[in-house]
Image (cartoon, rainbow, N blue to C red):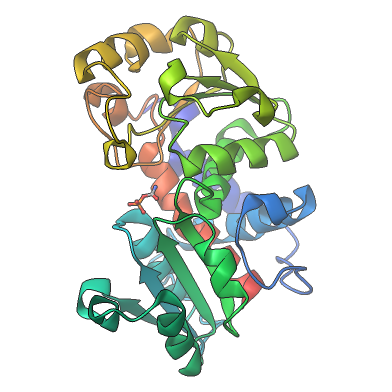
Length: 330
Ligand code: CP
């Protein structure tokens, strides 16, 4: 494995550096909930990332438990499918000593017609200290935050926001590049339907990174200029000088009608392969929030190439970010 992408080497460096780091500061975090990146200041983001960094090395050790939240209860309430977000919140909560409950929507009283609000109120009545919610409708996490006692964490709401994904992406970039300020990120693919894109654009701009959106016009938001980032209509133009190439999944499930002519044509114009990656800087990171559509937005071999792709490291650092978020909120 090459030096630039050796996570083990970086973990070793980090373990050494942590001996000199002050302990993380969990006091006085100025938010009760994590609903979106929009509500966070740059200093809040910095603090979450600094706290998360303390967990990266700890999560590599045999004993990963740090039961600072023993006796607290975390509920995962996912109305949309999830592998990474739901599981990593469960692992994060358990590593902090929390009791974690996963609600199966199909087996819950939602299937009998109970409203989202009544469901959430019932969970809150059981003294949940935190609820992670994912829902197909934008704004659901905000709505719950007005009606329940514990902390509400947005695990993804419609095409609106996915704040912990943007935080783990930022931690991954900072881990490899040593900073966010001045880093050039090419965000490529289905930006129109992507809550990951929205949260990432908000976060990266707040932290001083520069962003270019690369997509066919059918997969750009209605007013792309309003995002205040660069826009490119080809991979060659968009990847030029990029430090990070962040690919986005084509979200067929959120599309009514045809947004792309065919999968083959989409990959031919906007898919990431080694030829296109060469437009970016030689040490550019390849990222993807997952799940991946191999051969649609990214070549499968490139996605698996640990010399270039940090996709699984994003998943790994996602646990550390969620531990930090739970500690700071709960
Ligand atoms: N990136 C992400 O949110 O993955 P899941 O849908 O598997 O949670």
